Length: 330
Ligand code: 5AD
Ligand code: SF4
Image (cartoon, rainbow, N blue to C red; front, side, top):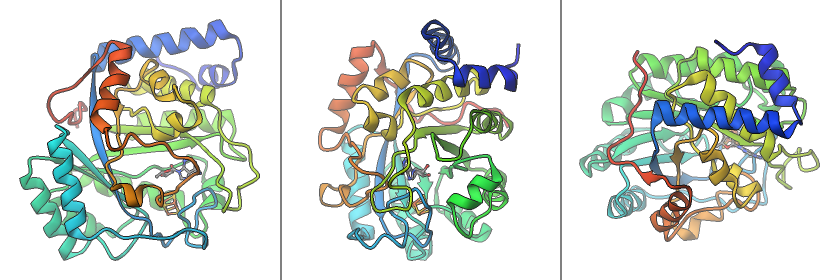
């Protein structure tokens, strides 16, 4: 039977440990049924910390003058992709702020070279023109991550000055139409966000028929206007992961870095209530600390795959073979 909004809200606000444990167990069973025990590993390369946007929650916002910014050259990005291959990783996620220096001809040539390494390419570089998304797809990008952050249009407009939820959703529609495997996601525990709005996020994930959904707790960053706000809790994030697994069935769901940052066992816990993806950070060490979306971001870095294997072995899970493409039928 399909989950109703009333049930979702009741579970999101529930504090009965038995009820919560039941939800997480049900999600773990759904993960096992639809995705199996193998966990897909995606290597993240954070190639530029420049961003033209000014999101209230994010450390990369353009008004944050405390951040030393960096851009990786094509050669550096390519070297990081080769490192991924050497580690046995099959997907690289190329992530940045909204930086218009990338996405043009040189970047397309870089994607073509990375494709020749036999990697699947996921892009996560924000809102671009339709034409740009099209060119990047033709150059070899397979997937695109663009979180809608919150499904509440007023909260969205408040947290992302100058941006509109409608435009975000239009981009997601374009990406789908262009044949990308599309990922989205949201933060939980944002100031002004309600349980009803998080339930709406989950139903929107389902409605969009997404291939991937990333969920993380909001973590306040000291050099943002939300420095003094309360952050999202691990419990709320895990409940949302669980509801998303139950509602979307065979969507790829990562155990996010944000979940691992607020709790040292956060990713392990997420993998036991719906998540089936890990995304170790392959950004070169000298840049990693500078990509400070939120403080104290953890990374599974130099020993990325070893650390990943250790996490999975402790859970009785294994690393998946293959690319881990979408399981959705379009
Ligand atoms: N806390 C947690 N997640 C954040 N993001 C941005 N800022 C924060 C924060 N302060 C998330 C957003 C964005 C992704 C790259 O990081 O969801 O899409
Ligand atoms: Fe830029 Fe994304 Fe951070 Fe907003 S959330 S400031 S778009 S990097």
